[in-house]
Amino acid sequence: MFSKPKIASFYKAIFLLVLQVLVLHSFSQDVHFSQSVASLQQRNAAFSNNFEGDFQIFSLYREQWGSIGVPFQSSMLGFTAKIDPFIENLKFFAGFNYLNDQSGDANLSINRIGLVLGASYQLQENNFTFAINNGLVAKQFNASALTFPEQYNRNTGRFDQNIDNQEDLINEQLNYWNIGIAFRWERKFNDKWKVNLGFSTDNLNQAEESFFESGNTQELSYGIQSEAEYKWKKYMSLMPFFSTYRRQKASESVLGSGIRIHSNTNSNINYIQPFLFSRLGVSRNIDAMIVGVHLGIKKFILGASYDFNVSDLELASDYQGAFELSLVYTGKGKSLEKKSIPCERF
Image (cartoon, rainbow, N blue to C red; front, top):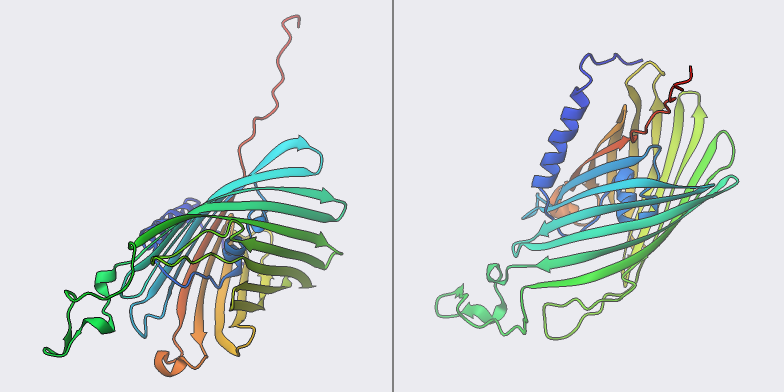
């Protein structure tokens, strides 16, 4: 179905190049990602080991709202390794993830370094996974880049940074620890259906987060995630996806499906998967339509998508939203081959 590339190292070069771009452009604010390949790991750490292999590296880059002002830029980098304790039906995994986000004229930035620890247990056709995700969050902004009503100088008709803004800011940066837990249930019902269902909660320690003298306690957040695979035809599968996340009165849901078109076994390209998602809130209409594609090439998954804004903000954005790139590499560890030791008697 597809021609075989002559240079095997071509894919490794693409991976290293894109990975470098993602790390160098690691900034943003409203932190969420549209693509299901790696965004599940952002919301639910129990999906970190949902791959066939010994370890996985993933990266994401997203840029949005560039059409109406300073763009929000987000990036994420993660690594997960499976650990075999040689106990029947039990597997452990561990990993880390780094999230960087920057937005707005005040350069509000968020940096999070997280550690993931988890285990999965196979019980007949069911696989149960539990994970703990804990990390250090650092936030900061530049107050001098903002102007406040109290700084308006009526004599000059301009804002004056030398005038006291009368805000009770303690500082322009803060740090706190965040702890979350996650669960995932996976089951293959028959030759056609396979389902993954997850639940996650963050901010278990309810840390204080505020740039002002008054405290601001981080409330618990909850998420439900689901993905499935239905083998529709011999070389075609439907990939339905659903994710919802709620924190205090804010919520976000993504719903849609992809169509995975498998290649023949002689090709380096495993599949092509175009997808269509919609983003909406519990009490709102559809905010965005997400159109994209995933391409499986040997051990790599390349993804690209675009969010078309269809909310009331489209009057200002002209339907422009966010562009997103993803890259996933799944590897298999090297194991020692069994070697026989010759007997000197013979």
